Image 1 (cartoon, rainbow, N blue to C red):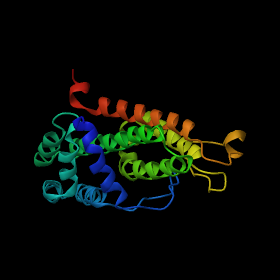
Image 2: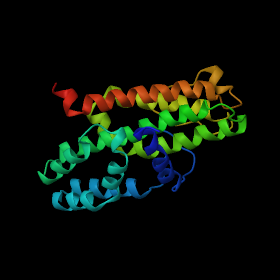
Image 3: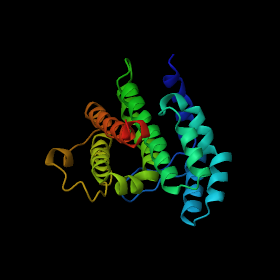
Length: 227
C-alpha cells in the first residue's frame, strides 16, 4: 500500500467522528472536528491580530498533527513552511499554506469517494449513501478556506462551488431541499425532475472537484509559483 493510500483511513476516521446534517452550498456550516476547530482558533488569533497566540495554537494543535499524518499527500515541506511563516509573523503567508492543506484534504476525499463509488461489488444502497457522506466531509474542510480562496483565486472559488452544487444534484433525491448557491443559477429541467441519486454522474462531478483543487494547490505552492 502506498503512503498516500495509507493516509486515507486516518483522515476518514477523523471526519466521520464529527457527522453533520445535509450540506447546502452557501448556507450550511458543518460541525467541527478537532482539526477544523483548531483552524478556527488560529484564524481568530490571526485576525486579532495575536500572532504569538496563533503560532502556539498551530505548534501544539490538532491541525499540525494532521499535517504530519497526511504528509505523504501534501506538497513537500508544507508543515515546515507553515511553521516558519507563523514564527516570522507573516499572517498572509501562513494563511496561504493553510489553504493548501485544507484543499489537499478535500481533494483526497474527492479521490477516495470516486474510488469507493466505483468499487466492484458495491450495492446500489451503499453507493447512494456514500456520495452524501463524502460531500459532507469535503465541504467541512473546503468551507474553511472558501473565502480565502475567493480573495486569492476567484475563478477557482466559483468553479469549486459550481462543481459542488452539481455533485449535490447527483447525490440527492428531488425531495431534498435545493442547494442555495448564488453562482449556480436555475437547475436544468432534467435535474429538477431527478428522483434518485446518480452515482455515475456524481463521480464526474467529484473528478472535477479533484481537478480544481489540484490546480489550486499547484498554483499556491511556492515551487510552482517561483520555478
